[in-house]
Every structure is written in C-alpha cells, then in structure tokens.
Image (spheres, rainbow, N blue to C red):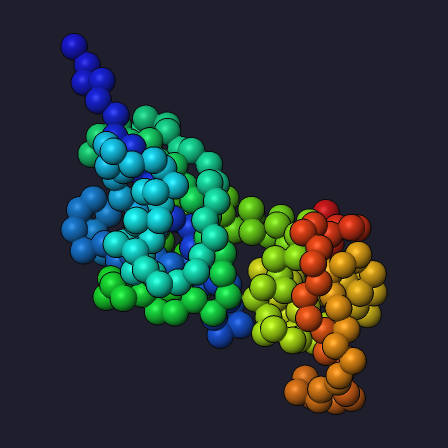
Length: 224
C-alpha cells in the first residue's frame, strides 16, 4: 500500500535590482537534502491558511522581509513526483518584484545575482527551474506593463529607465529606439519640465511615471 500523503509548500521568487544587477533572494541550506547549496525561501502551508496568506507569512518568517512592500502574485504550481527526495511535495510558487529591497533580517538569506544562480546545480531541488520561470515572468511583465518605472526614482530619465530594462532583460538596447518607444507609449511617462545632467553629457529630460496600467504599444524584447 502506497503512502498517499502529499505536502504542500509555498516557494518565493523575490527579485530586485541591486548594484545594477537583477538579484534573487535565496536561502543557504546547512542541512540535507542539498546541504551547502542555495534554495528559494519558502515553507509548508498551515492547515488553517490560504495560499496568499501563507506567502505573506513566509515573506516575513523565511525571507526576512516583514516590513518590505512587495506585491506577490502566484507564478505556477510544481508537482512532479521526484522534485523532493524526502516525500511527495507540491509547491505553489509566488513571484515578488520591488525596487531597492533591503537585506533580509535572516542571516541565512541573502541577495544573489540571478546570473550566478542560473547555472545547473547551483541551487537546490527544482528551484532553478522555478527561479527561471519567475525571471521570465518578470521579463514579460516589462513588455506589457509599466513595472520598470517602479525600479526608478520618483523622477527619472529615459536613460535610467533603459538601464532597468537592460538589467532585467539581460541585453543592451538601442538608446534612440528605446527613447522613441517609451515616450510614445500612451500614459507611460509624464514630463516634469525639468532636466538633469546626472547621466553625464547633455541635459536630459526628467519624467515621472504616468497612470497607465498597461503599455500600448507594448515594449517587445529584441529578437522576440
């Protein structure tokens, strides 16, 4: 007779831009399985809580970001039989994106560049797959939503906005073509009437985020 018990967990893909790199929050495992490797912060749901409540709780308890304002959205569910060597575990992954997130209050939890974690074997369980799915969701959101502006100061230049796209997408963008697209997207950017030289060179116009909830036309990644 087989054991029909199935555990349910929530795993968190929390992304931010730190030191001009796309970074993910990861947990250093000091015990088996997968001792001495990174994993995504997460944990088992409690019998009396809904999944979004569990995600918020684990953001505080496991990720160590109790006071950070992070929008969490459900990413995907992962349930193939051998994903955890200890028992049958189904994981519901949540994606969180926010600018300038602080260091975790947990000593075992740190920010690591996504590029360092995307190597096979560098992260426990199937968390590399979950992380890459979260990164792809984030990249896609930059195409059709004004999310990138949230990673900029309240007032920013087009060059500062372009750097966010380049960091998250992982590819350089043509400055003139990018300027034309973002300033032409309805409700995306609002001119403040001021200029700045903080980018170096000639004075650049300063913008703030508009009230658009989606981008028309969308910002498509090069090659897509």
